[in-house]
Length: 423
Image 1 (cartoon, rainbow, N blue to C red):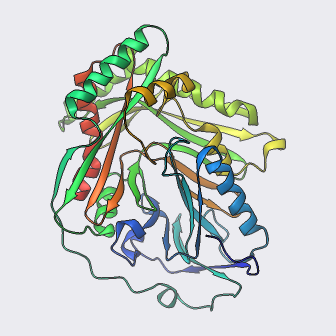
Image 2: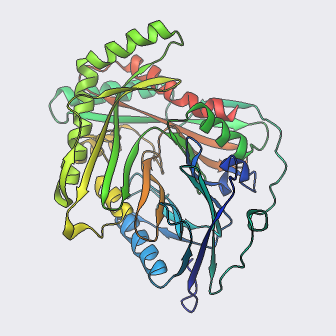
Image 3: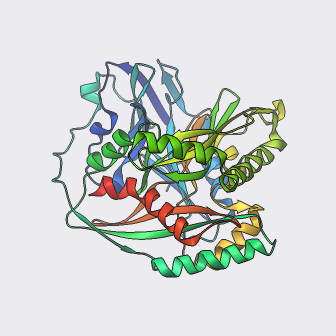
């Protein structure tokens, strides 16, 4: 569905007093309705839905990008704030594979509430008429009462644990044959809740516990991702690559020692190097320069630690009009979520993973009218499949030195953010 051709998108952004916790402003308790992109208290939430664009197959990214470009080309914009995320904004989520029935979606909300660097704003979007001016209280809909907390039970998804480990062993054999260097194997877990969860409680828990991550919700795909696929801001691109993981113990001294072992691990360093090289190679055709530290840092999260590298790049003048979504499409899938070489790894995944990833490990985020935006990789995430059911995902990078039992344990650690948030 799209706006009638006879109507023009009209957007007005006004600065408002501090709106408080963005996620508390979500008017509907339903997870499937939530729209959010929040980190350390800053970010965006969407309220209501003006229109959406659905896409599928190989062209799921390009069709969405073109639809958004067409919509905002003739838009009437009154932006009194002029920060990244003001003016017209859409939220998007896309399938990992072109073969997935999940396809892609861009959602254009009626209201966007944002905060950045101490500045709060409200953007209203309408079709064909300028929304009336007013203060924040007039612009924001009434918030529904919080639903009671719920309990949850969890069961294996497409593959039982033992079967998934057998698939990992098969993939290790493929890697050792020399056919591929690294393969990321994902698994899913089904959550059954004893009541309907409240989006503000679930997303609020993720945001509070994982403040260095981006807490997202788009079209029923929710999570807190530590991995930024791409940010485009005034021609500058930035990305955070994560690959190489170790679980935390909860003991500070022990975790410090484990962080040191992760930083020296040849297996994890090799996996991380694959991921960084894949990203920079994908950026190469349309950037004039890239910058990345020679050695990765260790990112500390409550449940795990990752090797991390922040990469920056500058778009070439002839590619300056590339939107953030177009860049995200060019980078997807990265070695961090697929493997190396990417196409060969994707074939191995299709044969041995034995499930549809849906929108797991694919781009999720937001984009403005100028093409600037932020797209993360949908990790530490779940797909809402019913009022009381969700499908949780986790993935592990498999290399020749991998151990199936250790990879299963790592996947369990990566599932804990969503498990804890739900229950």
